[in-house]
Image (cartoon, rainbow, N blue to C red; front, side, top):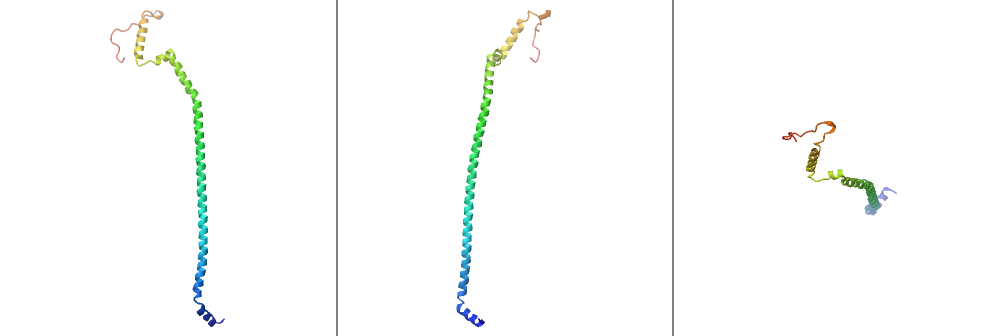
Length: 149
């Protein structure tokens, strides 16, 4: 083909060149749009899978926490049950001690100090006449009591 023939063809078909360029651009853009849609669908499926995985992990964590809580409650109940005999024994010991003479003396009310003073006075009065091993009896000092008592 000669250059004049090419120029003649260009003059005749020049309106087809922009149309062909636009058609090629439309095909390229259509391919890019398909790739973008495919990528978007892939991202959505990955996000859905990640959300489902997160829900499953959270459910597993909740179940594991419930199991740990149940185990801790059971352990606490076992420890409490193991301590119960000690507590009952301790309560029984206190109850039995309160039934003895020494326990009753410990359990007296607020006036027990006066009762102890009366007991001391009675014991001091009963022992005045007898002195052990030939020693003379200790005589109380007549007068005011010493300071500090």
